[in-house]
Length: 205
Image 1 (cartoon, helix red, strand yellow):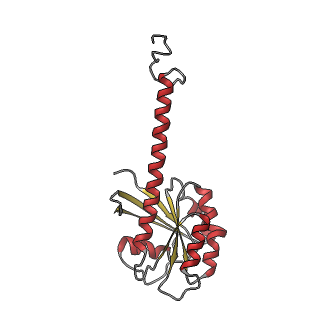
Image 2 (image 1 turned 30 degrees about the vertical axis):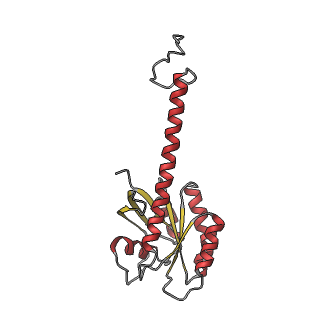
Image 3 (image 1 turned 90 degrees about the vertical axis):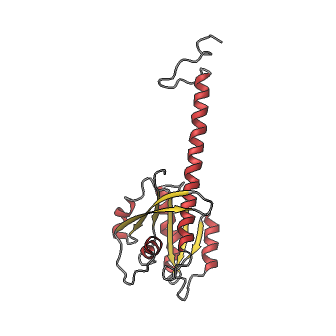
């Protein structure tokens, strides 16, 4: 199986990042809140389209005091999950103010999935508001409840699918460039290190 797809979870503190991760990887809901500094877990997935992949899920702290530690988890990211709480409008506002810019700064090519959390509670941010933002900025979106499990599998499978699609597109682009370079080398238009001299360049054709 190829190397794990690295999926990093970023968002305000206490929006349910760790609860989503625990529900998905362990099938449980943590009863007590402990602020996360850093944590990660791996899971093997079979996506709905039949593709298998291994994901490495990185949980991060939302507090500004840990910003330098959070950013240490960004290198080689394949996708971001950005949760906001349906019960706290400020966490929704911070998606645009803080988290999407931070994701773009880390890797503008990495797909982003927004996650509306705590939908089992009375909402101040409804599903339509999250969907409208996702459409506006061009990212994925899932409503979730870590307490009931609703939407959690869909969320992480969406992130894995987006990351895998991105990886496969990048591999296809690399293969295309490699074929082009080899063709140019054969025609004598490009010299690759260690490549034999082409018959055309040697004047034998």
